[in-house]
Amino acid sequence: MTVKDILKTAAALLNLTDCTEYFTATSQNYQASRETQERVDLLTRLANLVITELASSFVPMTCAEEVETADGKIVFANLAHNITRVLSVKNEFGHDAEFRLYPEYLKVFGGRYTVEYEYLPDNYSLTDTVGFKGKITAALLGYGVAAEYCITQGRFEEAVLWRKRYSYGVERIALPKNAAVKGRCWL
Image (cartoon, rainbow, N blue to C red):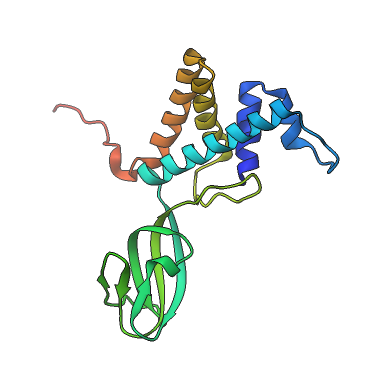
């Protein structure tokens, strides 16, 4: 899913017809008004806010990246994303590798490794693909964007509605599978 998919959903939920036309326009000659462009920019910033909030609090984005090191240091700044937590380090044969975690790098023996980690996303543009895997959908993120947009416009009752739908969806996804306890009865 791209940011544009999320914003199409949010624009449809909010009945922003000018933005819906902007997102569905296939012609390169389509010219948006200044007001529409400002609204699209605001929606894009709000989408980045919702994505970052979700990734940092409830459903982390994960990535596995192959790296090669001669000196035994895997520097976090050289990885593709803003790392927040190391999940695993595997050697070139797929076995767990020993490593030491330091504030700016991982210390391993030299060689080729696969580092799996959680990360916070950079700001996305309209055509970027969002890094969530699994059950996170454009509709769910669209609810979050709609809630934030309503808050910025002073439509607080409507914001509560969209926030409830967004929160419910996030809870369903973020709950552990064993969180539900089967019903019991007294004997």
